[in-house]
Image 1: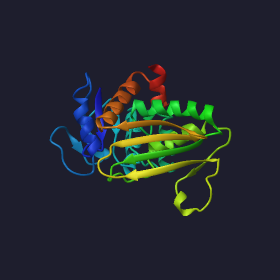
Image 2 (image 1 turned 120 degrees about the vertical axis):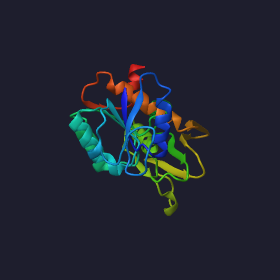
Image 3 (image 1 turned 30 degrees about the vertical axis):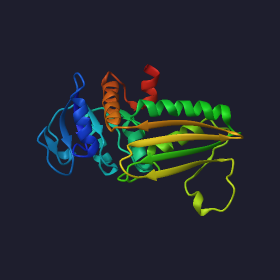
Length: 251
């Protein structure tokens, strides 16, 4: 599996390259990054310059590169794994449009464990609602730009899908002086140090609290997840939008 790595010089790009060497039949054959140089493989500063043939694109870059990356993938009919976070509504629509022409793997978190606790949280919400209040707390390193994390929003959306009434997401409770409403999911963000990623879903009821949590201790977790996603999507997948749910269903 020949990988074209978008965001090759970024922190995650370097981890993906390191992890790919441990996989059988997986190699980073080239990279795309507007900044810096690389002596490990051919590096292009834009997709217009790419000359190396690849079987799949893994994208751990910045939302600003999304459009050009998807256009190149569609032109070359190459499957794509989008692992970039902080993508806005316009970008999400571009991903959906691209999935009509090529296989696209997109999820807010490449960890199999995170996607598993998402399913557990849905089950818990279906059983405990509306008697339990639901809060989500996410923690990341001090260099992370977007807040709340895409994973926190993924968890909130998955929980919302099984509730009888669509909840309101509360991000800014400190600005309000009122009791917590029943129809809300609180989402809190912590930024500090080198925390790789921690997510906790809290179900607070009368005289009892239930917590479902996940902690990531290394970026390798997400890199390996992206490479496994690439293997999944390259193996004779039809055009369409895929996620970790599809991987879990095949497990």
